[in-house]
Image: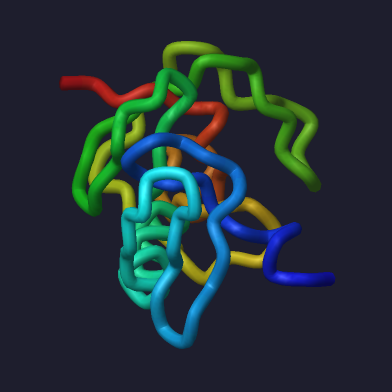
Length: 121
């Protein structure tokens, strides 16, 4: 795969023809130059933010509510819509998509995917 295929869009003119020259990206259409390191840092920061089902950024200690009935492995019952969960902890290095660690009343400690919760202000 060449750098032209993975090149980001120019932040100034949105051209798809940017190319890499050492540690810089250069746009041949508007001559804008930007740091490749800054692009990678921004991409990493975007990847580490965890958002709820509505796009609100979550933080440790937030209170959320469940937006969909969730079946619980090993239990005959499920977590119902509207269940409040207080003091969540975010898991940034999760490999299975369960990026919230919490305690749910009646079920105990568990991990939940952020796409099934909404932040309560």
